[in-house]
Length: 127
Image (cartoon, rainbow, N blue to C red; front, side, top):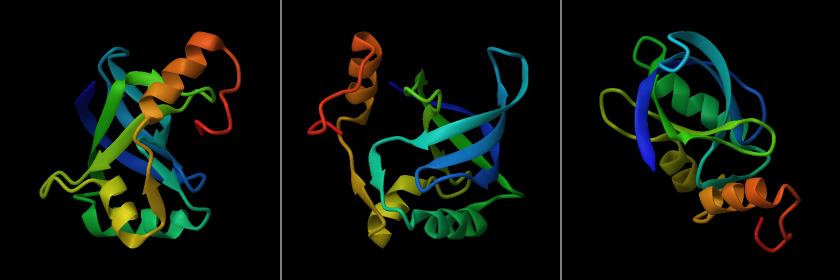
């Protein structure tokens, strides 16, 4: 499921679980601005600062590896993705969990697939 993709630059943090990145998209054969939801975590409302901190520390020339998950998009059109440090291989979501501003969401991928298949809001218990 997980496929390392191209190098990306973070444009901004739009929500506690959403980032906007600029990346080369092979399918488009060009650059695109993409909204991404952080895959596999529930982020607290105050996670924006931790995301910005991690990006400042781990940016290599302002760039990261964009790790996309089958280019699957959630119900809002956001790509399920994560950011990875090009040098150390550290990933953003691991840092957020360690800082205590996010919790694991092991069935995130399955929740998105279920929502797309049923085209309706899933149970509150699954979210």
